[in-house]
Structure formats: C-alpha cells, structure tokens
Image 1 (cartoon, rainbow, N blue to C red):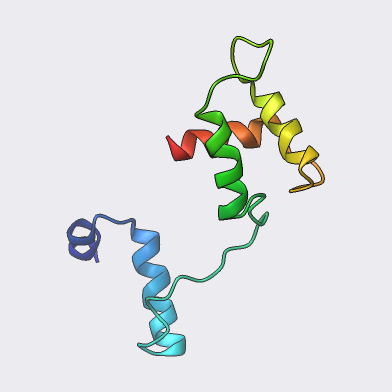
Image 2 (image 1 turned 180 degrees about the horizontal axis):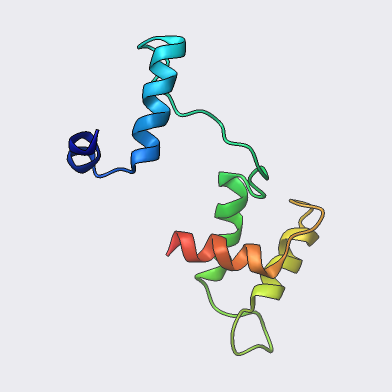
Amino acid sequence: MMKIVSDLHTGASTVQRVRECFVKEGLTSAPEEKPRPGQPEKLSGADEALLTAPACSEAPGGRSRRTLRLSADKLVGLKTVPYISHVTIHNVLKKTT
C-alpha cells in the first residue's frame, strides 16, 4: 500500500477508502468522487464571478479601497444570498487569486 501512496502522492486513508469502495461496489464506482458530509457551498460559480469582478476593479466612490464587508453587503443587496460573512468573502477571494 505504501508504494501506491508514494506513486500517487496521496494519503494512506485515501487508498484505503478507494480499496474498500472497490470491494463493496466494484471497479466502476471506486474512483468516483463521492459528496462529503458537511456544509454545502455558500456561493455558486456565478455568485463567485459576481464577487470577483468588482473586487478586481476600482474602489467605490469615497473609499480608498474595497472591504470584505462592503463586498458581503453588495452580494446581500443583489439578493444573491440572504446572508454571507466577510470571512466567507475572504476565503472565496483567496481561492480565486
């Protein structure tokens, strides 16, 4: 198993999980990515585009720069999401740089 881990540059738990899936469900389902439990994504791809485009432009009038809270308020104002945290905005922008 360690040879597989080193050859594929992955973790041992990933190899074990794929192996168990292969044994239970067969070859065709083993390599598929399964949805994981947890919070669903807060923003879709289109929502991220709405956020990213203005973040790369000039700051709004009267401001020296665009803040995370302004961006969050803008998405709420566009009725894209009912609420979004400035931390989520930070994580999305960090991911798209």
